Image (cartoon, rainbow, N blue to C red; front, side):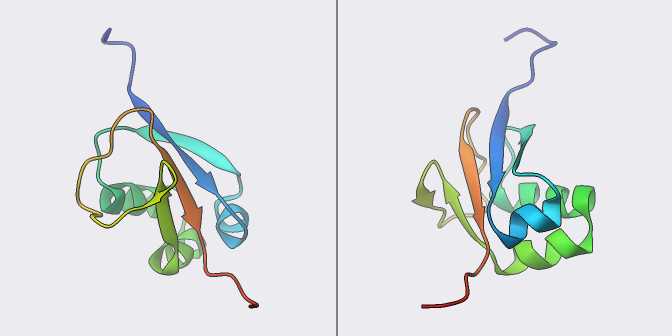
Length: 87
């Protein structure tokens, strides 16, 4: 990998997370854990998104993330799913 290329992963926001972030997706550096990424996203977008992230579920490449401290691989996709009302 060249020094000017940064490995990334994609964060996709749904429902209230999309509204709080003000976008539907964004890129973040790879190699961080889900907990680290959530903290960075809260700093980027403020308390409204931070509140959503505290109660959201996260999928990594379509699978529920059980270990939020393991570094995520380049190219992964994280889906941020806030709690949904209804039944």
